[in-house]
Image 1 (cartoon, rainbow, N blue to C red):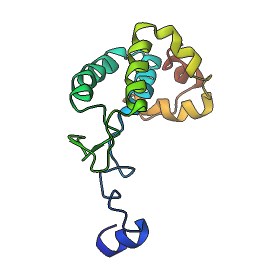
Image 2 (image 1 turned 60 degrees about the vertical axis):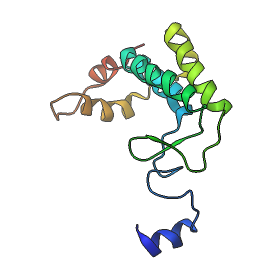
Image 3 (image 1 turned 45 degrees about the vertical axis):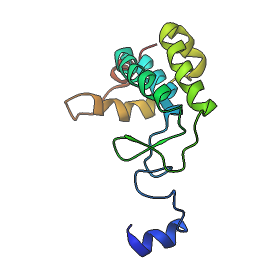
Image 4 (image 1 turned 135 degrees about the vertical axis):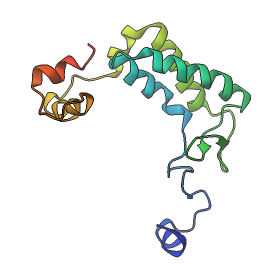
Length: 140
């Protein structure tokens, strides 16, 4: 959507631009969920890298609510500083990496039928996975 169509559909909210706010903005509070997914998939190094970047950037930027642009380079136009959910997401991420066993209290058992469809995308082969193969992609 662009121009008039965008304005009509979104109600002309000035926050509601592409790659901003709820249209693709980067929300630091989601860092803990990314960390949880990394732990669950056995890739904590990805979370460590994200947390290292966040540790430097969030404090310097006064713990903003969200960032704008596809790359998340600019503090959001309507972003508020010192957001507790940004700080809580960051601290939870650090806690999860220090104690990965705590991730189990924030996750559910896998739906293997759903996972079966998704796990196929993890392999280079485009063949249908078995439940055993799908389950093997999940770190328990």
